[in-house]
Length: 332
Image (cartoon, rainbow, N blue to C red):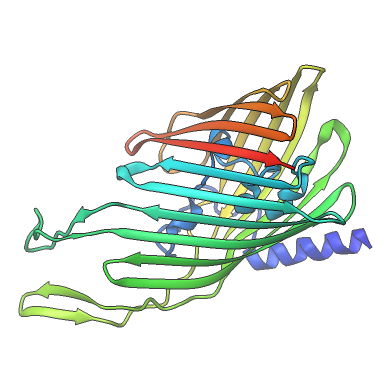
């Protein structure tokens, strides 16, 4: 039965994501979808690994990366996670997640994300230095996840999400889905993961916008349909070093977005007694070269659970740096 389920899962994921293996590595398809905020990572641990994360996601951030990963949560029944990202151009991104372990191996999850650009000046072709008006971007996301471990080796997860993008009076709403599986090979803690993120249909934005032209002001209230940035990922990880005090995890991941080039990522995480964590990652095939990502984490064990603090750093040569902070709590 498990063999048939695995085959069906791989077939569904391959068709849904239109995945090929490196047919367009380095070839760009940028600008072909909307709702780009759906691709922004939300937590510090994955940021330190440069997003090469779906095969090792085993905390609440798996709600964003690979819903099957929340079956790997610690033994506590209730888990919380809160994160904030200091993004480029003074954009702030806040994230919250809750996972609750059910009897029988199932896990329920709830995730929230909010992006706020702050006020920005309105400019036009005729007033390139500003009209005196301002606008802002407000994007939000809510997701509900169910995941289950079918065996000690195989888990699956499904997330239904509602995404909203709002800018200058134009609002786009869409219902989208994520699906993921994880399979633990067993040798050196090797694990394999596949996920499809942001799988949905095209939708039409609503609202109107006024624009100056050579004859006066025109109102635009009809827009083309907007598609979502679906993303297919394959990840592999294993632990080449496992001792009483130290563990090193090596990670590789292939990313196949529908609106950009394919990339290949690598990363590594060092774990000292589940107290201190060091992380580093890099992505190959991107448009702009950058410094490797890195991050650190500190976990404090408690009698009734745990608390972990994570920091992640990402950098692009021209855009600058991104800082992410995450707090994770497990109780009961």
